[in-house]
Amino acid sequence: RMRMWIMAIGVAMIGTGVLAWAGLIDPTKTIYTSARLGWLSAAVGGLMFGFGMVLASGCGSKTLVRIGAGNLKSLVVFVFLGLSAYMTLRGLFGVVRVSTVDTVAVTLPATQDLPSLIAHGTGLARGTLQLALGVVIGAVLVTWALLGNGFRTFDNLLGGLAVGLIIVGMWYVSGHIGYVSEDPNTLEELFVASNSGRMESLSFVAPYAYTLDWLMMFSDKSKVLTIGIVSVFGVIAGAAAYALASRTFRWEGFGNAE
Image (tube, rainbow, N blue to C red; front, side, top):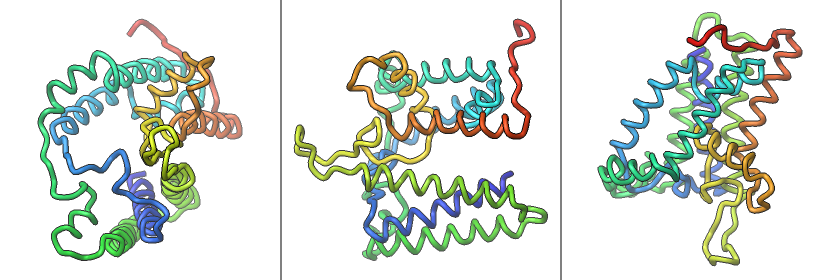
């Protein structure tokens, strides 16, 4: 399974590098890259997320897969993870976050993606570096995955390739199709396919929060479907379809109070 994820990362890197080199997306405009590196926020958030996911028996994507397969316990995880995510984005936890860990950061000489940092230090063209680094590092990862004994099965290859291509596809949708060079209301550029208003790809924690918000505020016409929200429903639907087709779908709840 680890090799399948490594293959997916490699495919995603190659595809993203090609998109950037072709001028279809600009990775420096994503929600993930900025010159300000909040390392303490990332460390504390990662620690809390990892601890919580061990208690919940899986990450955000696995929770959605289990919901699709009929696991009602994972539905509870979905609700509480979504609530805590929203509180961290805009609520009580967000106030604490902004006034504590977010104050500790390092300002980099360029946006925190590797091509931009290398381009700043060497003077090389960022577009060329995006393609070269994406293809070379991605190819190394894919090659390593394929060299594993017993890895080259249909399911493993399909899983690694599909996940990688989905990530590339979401970059294209949010960064190219959903890109507006000048919003008529603000006269600034806008990425309309995401909740953040910036280019995004496949993730699940913030989309949990936005999915709950969309469901609770469904009658509010300003609440629209975004790639994050759609991906949540898509994973659940895909997991349910596979579980039904393979006859592994079954309702599962809590056996006791523990």
